[in-house]
Image: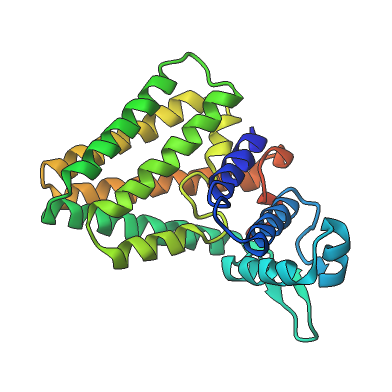
Length: 262
């Protein structure tokens, strides 16, 4: 189901292409294609990326390629080399674990402040409707690719709304930033759940945590809301461990970039 996740991410970003200039559109498309190549293993960890070779491969000019490479460096997927060009990064299991922990910490803070300050009813209603949509998906005995793709979109949407509940542009910005780190997004390791025998059961547990944090925020229970989101991130930590130990790495985008602990 990894193709479903890639498709969702691409659709979400390409939705913003409308209204952009041709150069901006070309840069975004180059960025998405390069990210796809990295996560699919077409450009393995440590591979040197030269602008000219990418220009020839993607058939676009150097300007959007240069902008796309700079953006991917900001995302942390590639790093600039002293003598020019870029190389695909690799990540230690600790790097990824710390990024997930950081997201859980910020989401916990957001949930606590949302409960203590009181969240906007309109955002609470949107979050509630989002979770009802996930409930409808999980009511099925099994998830096919289309249903799983929908789950990923709704899951990402709920976490985005969670970032808005505290009414803090600072925290929303920081949450967006940390979620853009490699493998730290809310759905980064959901594909591990999708390929396990207990897939639906684990998604149901995660969904229960979604509802519980929403109820805690509505009840103005700040400490409980924070605790639930910290616990929620631990599920991603478990999925990380399962991903790096799995023998089915081809099903999990980008996991080959993670170096196992010695």
